[in-house]
Length: 570
Image 1 (tube, one colour):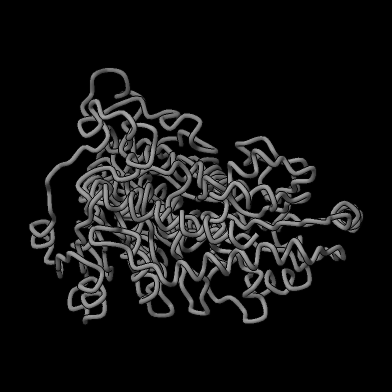
Image 2 (cartoon, one colour; image 1 turned 135 degrees about the vertical axis):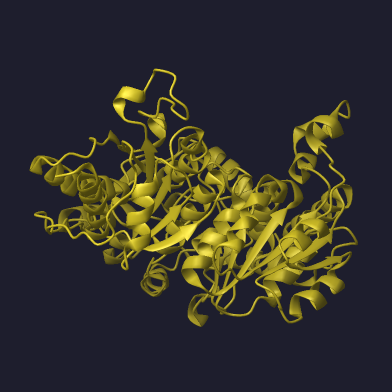
């Protein structure tokens, strides 16, 4: 068999193995060494392919797709530093438990370590930030190689999807020539399928948990970030029987589609409530159940760290302990849905009413909040109020996600929130938002700060290669707004130079370069008007100019009002 046929069989075998393992999409960045695989992916009718020339952006785009679909997404790039540019998104995927399949083309073994161009050491390139890494064999006509590919590709995808989900790395060495035979067919795989079940609880374990939790007098349920596909209807049926207050992190997506008979149980303003020392003293629970990742709210983290409830149950399919403050007493390795089989009979009405009445106070203050000129909170509040049902919002790190936590009030609308909270970085946010939109194809919005937007301006290039539909709201406070709330702000020396980092940049020229619909606004009313206008281009950018000092002042006034009203209500 000639080299071209051997190469063709190799890349087709790899492509078909990915499809058999359940992969449906691949994000490709152009390059020479990856040519055979790129051809094979593009020629496959069953694999949806996307293009992005910037590998760092491509990886975050794929991450957004995998997050939105809860399915593995392939990344493909050429050799050299192209592969290095995947590393930030792979790190995020590892800690956020997102299944990415990174495929890096490589030089053959005889061209490694000898000064060949575009050749770096790609073995174990991503270190401990991938769950599995393999240097695949060179194309060979020996039948054992085909069997190896069939099973190792399935192993890689299964590993990526097994809790804790995460990225895997396939390094693929290829020799020149790099062209394939597009008419060639290969024999079907001898491997059939891999079946993956959910981790549940035995009857004995259910009874043990019922006994443990039925002694509860002050029970608190915490829902952190939950994956797409989580059964919200079943959860609220369980919550209704439980009758504990439910602290709903915005990324749990339990603040949306809240059933009427569960609205009181949904506590969304806990971040503000727990800034009150007196309320914290009255709200100490004896039992906590948490599902999902640790919530965004720092006051909640501080509250739990100080309270150290005698029973703290964390339910997670992963054996990893997501417990940065060391308060979990019982780790239940199971899918969150396993809880729905519990029959907990204990209820403390006064404790539940404490949370509900406090949340009502915070809800009233939030509803009346008008902010000041330059405040970001009122912009976020207006955005969330004006979103149509069936909308998705990707939220940037630092202040945007915290403002969403503060101002996103529970609703019966279908609103889904997404964010990169694995490592909480500000990189790749634009690309990730496009990835979510590419999968879900709903009304899509991105809420982002100016520095984070600058960090991923290249993400806009995705719009040149495939259809996009995204409204981007940029909160431009000319710098790093979150540092104004941190201890660094108490030291004036070098604050602006090192932490404020003003750039003086605005984004109308970036919008023009990508043919985006662009508007700049100065206040909340202008913002509301622009948001409700017709979207006429695939990308719409609304740049809102805000003030870091005003933002701090108005937020602190808002929290103070809630605290004072809580204290008067004791």
